[in-house]
Image (cartoon, rainbow, N blue to C red; front, side):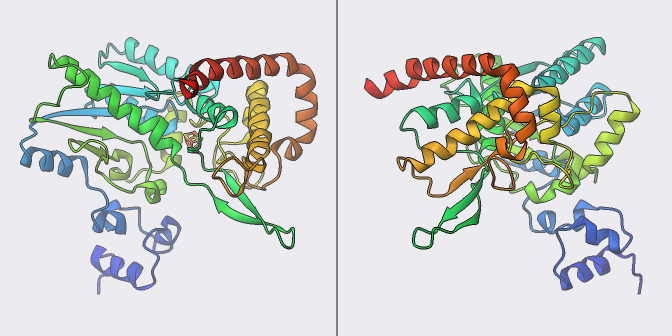
Length: 371
Ligand code: SF4
């Protein structure tokens, strides 16, 4: 029996129920191959070529290819492939979540300059959430200051047993922010751009022969994050994962950027609960935020404390106690030394930010409630 035969190997993976872990794939000394993965075999996603074929079968022969650009390592890798003519895009779109660190905005600008220097003229659109242009900061401030109930961030939760007073870990809130503040704004932006190109208004229907394939920069090691290649909002939009198709890992992209001396910071929000520390190193961490953007760290500490204050007030449908840090302890307590020091040096800027937001929320969302 040929033990390197893909069918034989897949049968072995299946039989011991470990089809979704790369670590186990390496046990068999096999390079990652998305075609052997259950997500692909079960039709959770298809390749760019298969998606394009499917759209053409539906009569959508005018297909626009879009890069959802996050300014971090993986989508930068795709951007460079585009600049080298290896992958075609009609649009590059960056959706600003309103909470990216300044160093990510600097990386986005760096790539815009590189695009110009390469003589590449693909339209580069910067967009944001439709109704909350202040992004995640606005969503959280609205949740804190008004009766707004929707909460889209994957915070760590604890639950309180009211009889015994015991506080226990209670999972995480669902991660909806990536979809709401990154992916949907990208779809809306390219939709508007293409309607305009066809001489149509934003509220008009997309021509029946138009389809979109939006590339998302997930890597092979993030394959578990792929849930679909269909857009729930728009039937003519498909989602593709070219780095997965290339069987490339996050580390491959970082290495590629390093070798070429391109920027290598991972994209994320400064307050993202997936920020780590110590031995939970996944490439984005609180230390980096503390060091590079002390004010952003203080903002995260402020949000962290406010979320619990409001939740304990009992006016929200959120039943669990929220934390931004994985230890389910206040962020200001986890980094007590840094917090005390920075609070002293940045107090007035933090207060100004808090006050500016309070006024902005009163102006925009409280008037709407009163009306
Ligand atoms: S980086 Fe974190 S907080 Fe920001 S959109 Fe993604 S999951 Fe949400």
